[in-house]
Image (cartoon, rainbow, N blue to C red; front, top):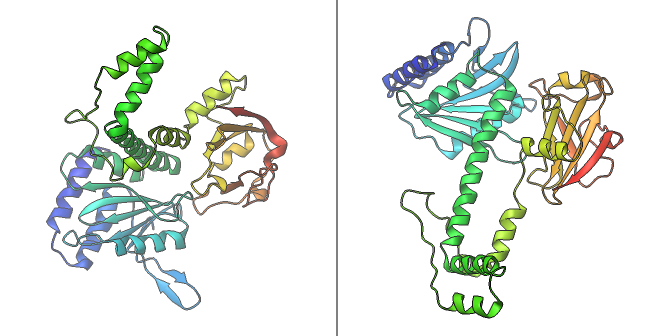
Length: 360
């Protein structure tokens, strides 16, 4: 499929229906999902799918996308002339939670993709893409949302990668802001002292430091504006340590740690999970196919700087023992600081398959 051509046609239809009625925009949106391969005739694009709330009330999401009869995406529509508000996000969240879905879309003045991570009580906005012709971001997003391009793992990885980039950008801004504050010059001086300590005696180093002025400023056009905070109230060394302590490692880094410590983990047959933001569990949604293979699980504890490595032999766990999400993936929520490593969903204790705990 020529996704750029499809994206441009989507932009055309959205702008053409800028001031249309809600009913007409509903029809337009249904057509747009048809452009990326989903069929209303086959029951894949379902308008106003009824969802029960309690025993007596029903709600009707504007569009539900289904794959092989299973809901994978819910869509809330707002005419392009209507500014998307927080109340619309709340509405989308309610539909996603009722359907137990990880992904949702707000479609109106822009394309907004939301991800419902178990790490957070609120929805996370992954992107906000204006309907601009030839938008690379738009092309990439509709490709992953298309019938041919969709996989749960692929869309989840897309969300995680974008959110990780945003998190790292924010962290870079924090470091930059710190270095450009009053404490920044002292940090540079401390680094310089350490560097000079292998060359000069302390007396000469002290004299050098006393005779220089150091300041740090941002280059024009580099990392964005600073976060609003009173840095003078926080000790600079403590701030740097806190930022470093909260850094989570990625799956590729965890696998390398295992290899470096004599544990040869198969990347394709592995599940990686970081301690979530509540500090209570490790959450993951692996594919059920892993059960039939020698399955590696890597749990990353960024508080204690440890990786817990498990190896479950093929068919040690059956499908009937685990719990599944509505998407068909395994739903795992493993307790933190529990020597049995019990999964709160299935009650399986993974401690019997613990191979090694690696510090980093």
